[in-house]
Image (tube, rainbow, N blue to C red; front, side, top):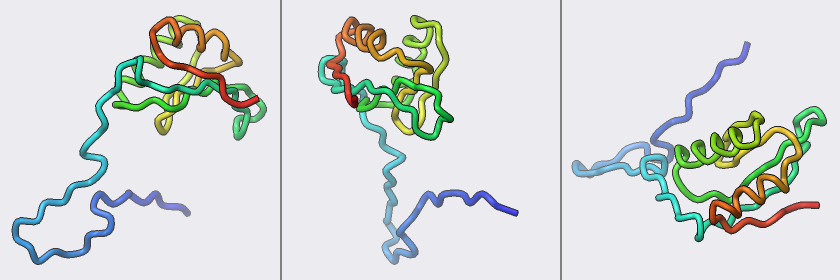
Length: 116
């Protein structure tokens, strides 16, 4: 029987004698989203851990998760496919590297093909 453990919010701090101590975690402060001209995105094809199915992977986005989700929704709607956002990367179902590359270039992003 497996139990899921909750990730502790205050990892590393056990006790502080300072009465004015304020704990600041990395999760509290998200990075501001860079404008498209300053983004350096990589578009690649991935098959690992997906039972042989191909996924177009967009990595390198710097910014808030909500902005990445909005970009993902826009791409998925334009291409007519499914996908998701996981751990700061955008996953698009199928081999759509060229289409995604052209779409992102049209939006003003600095994009390169990565991988083979």
